[in-house]
Image 1 (cartoon, helix red, strand yellow):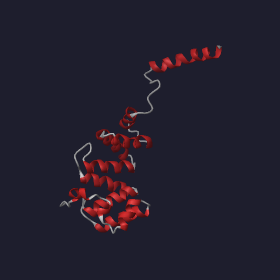
Image 2 (spheres, rainbow, N blue to C red):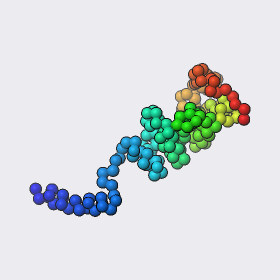
Image 3 (cartoon, one colour):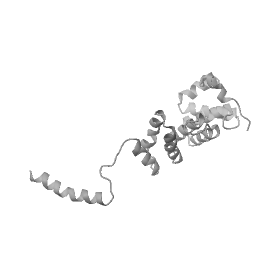
Length: 178
């Protein structure tokens, strides 16, 4: 009986001193508030960056964009891919095919197979970049060699873009003049 009371008495003064010094007792470790606090403090670890997926799926595109941009700037290629998707579809900001392709280009340059595939598609379509079929096919081939199934499928279909893009989206991929 004496030991628990002794510990309680010994621990209280330290806890009170921490609280008085401005420290936070029992800080939140999970949840969107903590994730965004981490991002706003420049802490882009794997779990924080992965949380962006759930934030995006929830429809909080402005928050997802804030999170993914910090993560992408710190080199997380999955976040670059998400920034590309947000920019390509105008989620959380106006549609910007040039920015979308820029994010895919960065992910591809970092060796990410999804980035290679997406940048390859942009080059094949001429969306957000001048059309370059040879370079686009080469990037799709790199992604396929890395094991990306959708890249293998596109290559197997002779690079027919209808294989990976619904025809309902054809309006979106009309060539632009650069």
